[in-house]
Image 1 (cartoon, helix red, strand yellow):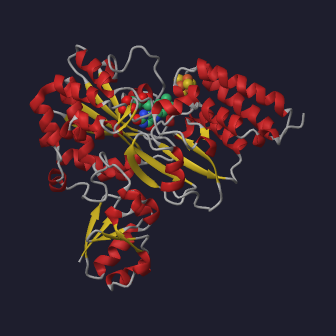
Image 2 (cartoon, helix red, strand yellow):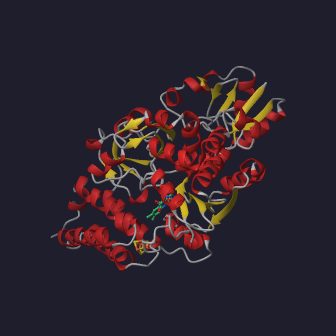
Length: 487
Ligand SMILES: Cc1cc2nc3c(=O)[nH]c(=O)nc-3n(C[C@H](O)[C@H](O)[C@H](O)COP(=O)(O)O)c2cc1C
Ligand code: SF4
């Protein structure tokens, strides 16, 4: 009997290693795979496509004896959480062994690179443009335009830098992509390198991702001969949120302090070591092999408006069914939270969802009909960012969440510009006064004024977007602030 168990970090945190050992000791053949992304079911055990989860040590014997009906979820691929998805980027999730070159090749691996080699750089860039692929790191900038800018730049050396800093709260898709399907990311980088004329690539991974770092290092070694003359090196960041900002990341890669650079010059023209550089998020680059293999039109057929393709949405926080849900843009926030996420884990009513990481807005259920789309979220003063959802029940104190946004900004500010460096600290102090009921109305007005300055005066989105969580909390949940007014 072959038993398949994920070796993804989340499964490991839930005890997957011990469960795998117990199956091996009981005589089963154990294979370690990537994760399906149904986090509430980890450790998920897959026997001939039938799933059992979450499995504890005490369940191993009963599963082997065929007496674990209570844990059985039926055919994993047919589970509603999986069957409702449109998995393009995560097509291999749960199905293959991360570091198996055989598994990768058998599931269409390297076909995108082969195609790019056949059609050449210009047609490759055209394909990425036509697919409508936008950067998945947060800003949603069209990948093809960035690539074309780098391709058109004249330089003796160009670089592909993969942004794997993944600092947003509630996000884990980059980590899962690197741990579960590392060759796909490397293939995407090699295609980008071919398209723009770069032979060197770096993956910048946060130090908190040791499993992803190990997988990426092993994968880069294993496939070096297949991607040559392109070469990929893994670099580990020390763990600063602002080092996810692309210019700060480039400084960090160069061994400098992770401080934001003023733009222009754009990294596409003067990036790493002053050379033209593509900086793309993990999910942007992992989308590329599918586009090259299946065609730009096929990719663009998914989605809505200017948001084409699919988005691996990460559902987290106080939610029953947390995990990775890849789907075409256009699904509503309410469907994601209530139908797919199953509401809160606590069983209490959902009160707010923060979308897009710590700089994203808090959305009340009255906005749940908003489709997951860059422009639709901009229209409600929010952002989809890297696709992370953090769900809160009705016990949340939104004034404290607003305070947390300012505190986070103050802690993570690189210090380069005044609205963010000083504004966040003053904002924190002022919100503390609001929370203490000290002249709350006047102090709240001061916070709103300060947010305006931060929004329009900050050099980068850390200071510039911190007003989103703060103002959305004040706008949508005024009772949490007003209740504290003493004047
Ligand atoms: C404070 C801050 C943090 C960021 N963190 C990340 C991150 O962790 N990962 C990421 O890909 N982009 C992050 N970004 C966005 C990057 O600056 C950049 O837009 C992105 O890497 C470009 O790749 P893409 O076009 O593929 O999205 C961050 C931006 C800011 C302002
Ligand atoms: S907004 Fe904050 S993080 Fe961004 S450059 Fe200014 S001080 Fe640095």
